[in-house]
Length: 143
Image (cartoon, rainbow, N blue to C red; front, side, top):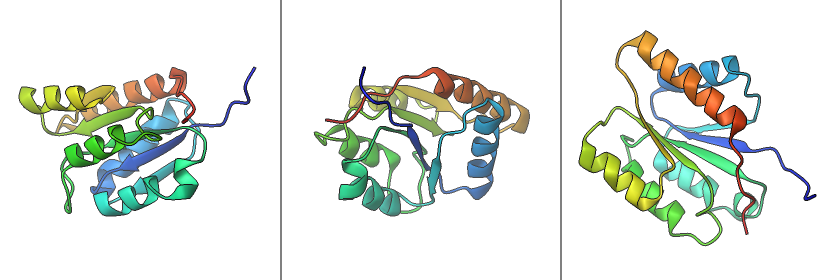
């Protein structure tokens, strides 16, 4: 049986309040994995494409599409076009519910697309469900 590495969660979210709420509800669902938060696409890409991360154990990406410096769809495309990073599950977590945008993300390789409800309680419930999903998901090792 291969050695299992803990899955690191990479959260790319520019809204600090949303990031705190997401982490709080993931923790509430019993997920205790390391969460690394990035407020810009640029810093997230630099981290994800660093040799240390590319050759490390498995990770999962929580991706907001509306970032101040780049479109999250571009980040998704970069990840899924990279030979080492393409296996990482990507959960799109954004306020955009345009069906063309949703379909585009799935076409590029997103595993899950969650629309952030504007209303706090609905958003909290969606994030709790995400936490439950993360607690049972199996993430493949990179190449």
